Length: 102
Image (cartoon, rainbow, N blue to C red):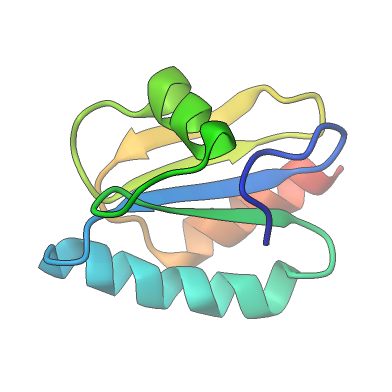
């Protein structure tokens, strides 16, 4: 995992809050997806309840819509192919990441 997006690589970015029940469920899904894609996709975890690095601050500024959990998937070119605040199941996330790897 890195503090920010990695150019030329698909990126999975999750923004969450520690006290949010929905964020905790999405975090568990993120762990499952991470186990499947950790060698091929860059994962960035942004805890909105803690101090953020400059790279994480940039991701929040660029993509955050004000609601958590919030997931962004960037393809290899850096284009957001998914950018939504809400829970998302593992199957659609896997499909998005498979497409981002092509």
